[in-house]
Length: 294
Image (cartoon, rainbow, N blue to C red; front, side):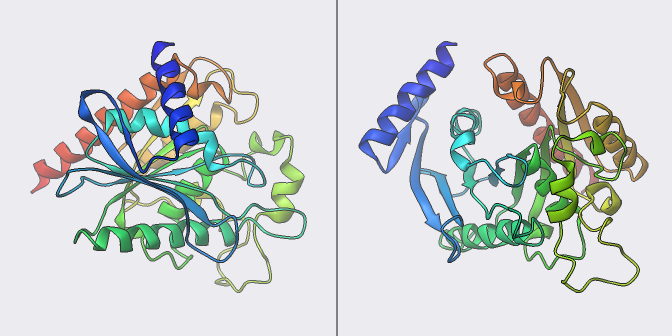
């Protein structure tokens, strides 16, 4: 609780004073750039945080909010971003908004295009410090689906997919075609607005397969760590088992965990620190495995 009150205090100062940096304990400091536009649409904005007084960074966490593909905002992940910044002072962070779907617009390819364009902007910023960054995509719920799809899908012309080092999937639907996901309360909207069927696609791949993360997993998919609630009434725990099975079958380095609670409880004061520590351990294991193969 004390940690979250501290973060709330920091955030209050941050929002009221609009400082251009934020400092945590132990001298950890980040330069802040808020609401940077990466496109012409008002929704195409991101917040960028880069460590101060560092000649290089290890990578960039890209946070992608949830909200059923038609709601939510990057501000929903601000507290979590700050918690991550304390744990990972050698990484930069981009917390992004994207174009939301409605009854007259589609989820895809708009939202994966927005991720790609956001990564393009961040890449250019890193070019200023002569760095071609590796990205760790972190999404919750719909944002987790988009994170997986961006990293796994090989049809969309994503410029930066090969720079994705890992995916952090928090309560994300991994198999949209499985019967359990069809119980989703807003499934009819997702089914109608998931993909713009007027866009050309390969004749051997259906519009049902294109937005489905598990369809695209192969041995070259990036390492993935997943978190699912044991009492989630929105995304059933069976999605974890489906994803685990397919990642394991393709020998993709992965881990998955259950946390106590429902769909929104991953970010509470009990679960969030555990999730952040698991992410830290996971990234260390990725680096260890890569070094062992050299």
